[in-house]
Image 1 (cartoon, one colour):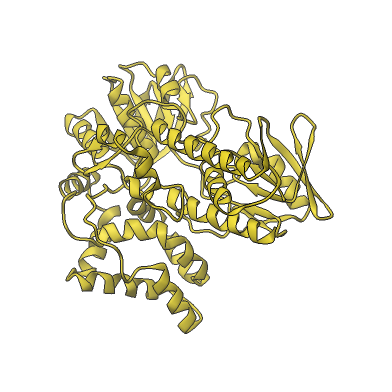
Image 2 (cartoon, helix red, strand yellow; image 1 turned 45 degrees about the vertical axis):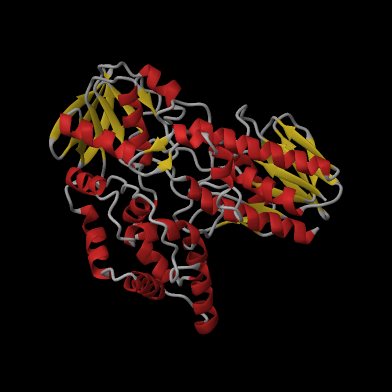
Length: 473
């Protein structure tokens, strides 16, 4: 069997790791990646040490069936990066990139030991056509490459330019790597950061680590900052599990949002916690003062209640599976709470929350909403909103691509696959294979949950795709 993997980020690493454990016998495996930073993708390349992995090790294993795989690799190095508030190692993302690279290289070595020919092609795949039972992939240099199965692991979409500022001096549309982009931001400049999610947190914390002395402003339509991770307490969900969801589906033929709420209610009842208290606190996220909420959550890092912890874990472990079973009206209900859901499911680490709070209390950091327009003129940026006009020296975009957006570099390949009838664009975004020999892993996979960016979710997708490929061989 000849396998082609398009892209060499975290999704490809998870796929290769599972293939190394399950695929036996001869054949070829070809990985296509134009970037020099193999296996790291956009998030985990070389960068500032202040840019941290935003989750504890138990949620960052790229090996789906072994949640301790990353922690075991980290070993004694974890003690150097221990977050005292969280009680877990929080490493620079570049170090996590080393873990991904180590896992990928070990997988390739295992595949070679099985007699498989392994190649890494430094180039972009621009097209793919079917010929009988085979695929023919074209790279940008015009060469053709044959394969039996193709796995698309092309990563997330390209960041949007929400105010049409691209090309203006002082504007950064894609902030990563921050080590490069923040060099262009003078330390005393007045900086506007568009967005208030985890990317915005990375930018603020990195500016502070570089000794930035000028004011920093977060522009947020919602005024919602990410929630804050709480110290793990060792609770393992017993009600909100994939097994319980599967049992409900088998028993009733369907799973509804009310069923999932019932499981969470039962989970909390078993430990004597109030479901209504949890939901009331979550519902107030969009109306509470963000600084007061940040202070409260940072003080609650050691709060023993499990409610938010269960939501944060199961959003990634159970959520993608449950999402596929929900009726469309229930999916629409969840989409209406997208900002709240992502804030809870993708929280910031306490050390970053403490930095934000310090800057907010000092008056160096502010949060604004109600902005109608931003213009670049005469070397400055003018922001017009409900509270008048303000000027900024630099603007950094922290608005992430929409879920399941097609990366700009992958557009020619996706266009060719759709035109050939090999795949279809999903109404909610992403790509759905129409050929069983085509597999999509990662954010581009159509029909998935709107919470798509977690390593745990990517690892699960990658393992499923690998098992499907091996079974077909």
